[in-house]
Image 1 (cartoon, rainbow, N blue to C red):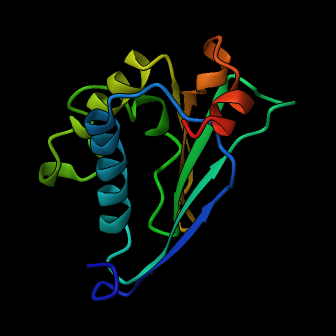
Image 2: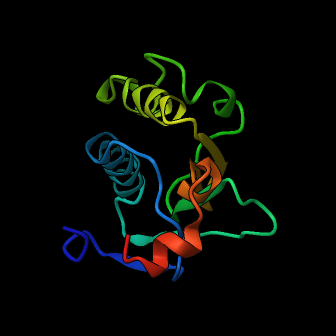
Image 3: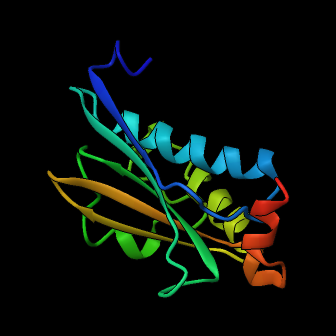
Length: 147
């Protein structure tokens, strides 16, 4: 799908990221929704980047997932409403529920979701999910035990 669309996929997954507490199906739907929106924002092609990171010193409670596109971008005036129900930047083509539902899923996982965007440059969604080690489980011992 990406190759046909002229979209280049860049994936940069940091090694040794702790596990996260999530319902895999629900979080997958968040990622699929955001990536689908990104693809639709790049009808003439572009770059879709997916990155994971974890910084034990700076933010030990969260694993960070960033999904960035080089698409149309979202007008600054729309950004405060991007997670509101029935709000869509796609006019009549969008129901305006995807990001609202995604926001709820992330919040229900005790996580955070943020968006930065610039028209003509692209959009970045940052999703922060609770790291398993922050919930009282030592990540180093879990990693050593193969968990």
